[in-house]
Image (cartoon, rainbow, N blue to C red):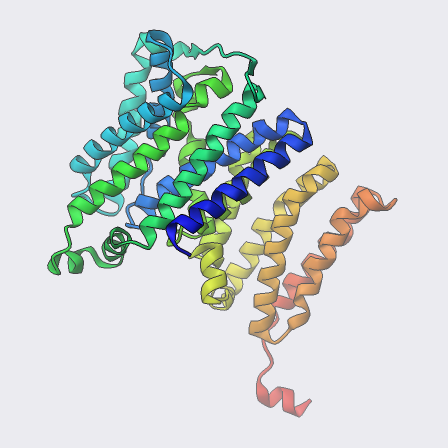
Length: 421
């Protein structure tokens, strides 16, 4: 699909999403949806540099915070409409991204990642000591409750972030299918060979850092109006840096749709966890899923589907098989006690377990291993559907998973032994 038809299709999908959100007549949908859309922009922006060119950026929170504090500055100095603030925040963050790239892009690998992390620390220190934007105490941003035509102000913010998400995804797709994207790919695959062939690697990397920083700054610009109060500790928080990296890696880093899938999946899971359990478990969920996908699907969900790769080579090692089972089974017992609403989070880990058991079963010729995690799913939801006590369901599920691990660790029969039997 060409650029303009794709953009038109994306606008239509965005319009449907906005119409459905208004139809539900629940402002929380807009509050939660805003966060998911915000992460779509951040993940897509990170992927332009980290996925397309292969330069891992740990300073995502810095560019996001730059956009947010740009809005705070103008809110105090000369109030402007939020769309204008988003443009200004994008320009400021893009310029900082250009400067950062010029100073650090001669570094490679871990050295570049550490340099971006140092940039975030430096910028946070400057903001803490800048009293005009609140300093360490933070700053309040008073916004109206309603806006003409749309009504609720949160719907206005949701719509702005929805438009920005469409623009970011469309830009990423355009880059991927252009000469610029091919240049980024040569840098990712082999930068030295690209330089030897005459590819202007430094110029391309500067474009990537500028675009990535600009979109992150635009995503941060409406944040003070969304939350009403910002402080350096939260704006430069670990959540933005970790999610910006984890979402593209889980979705897939070499294509525009990977960050979109990862942001929607993790964003929705985190919002469900915030409502049903606590916002404190958000990074725990992200970390566990990131470990899963790094081991099972290093190219993300998109790579797993496109390349039809399996985890057979991973689960050949019995130790890895056991560790993956323990890692994904551990949150089940905590989630089952949080009620039915939290079970949607546990379902994701059960599906990962089912996939691991399926792959291990293929290696050993025991296809029926997948039945144990599937039975565990039934027992996880049993207390909410039937009169089975929670403790009974947990005990039965635990026994089944122990049997599954035991059967997965039994040695595979040799052909001679099988024929003799």
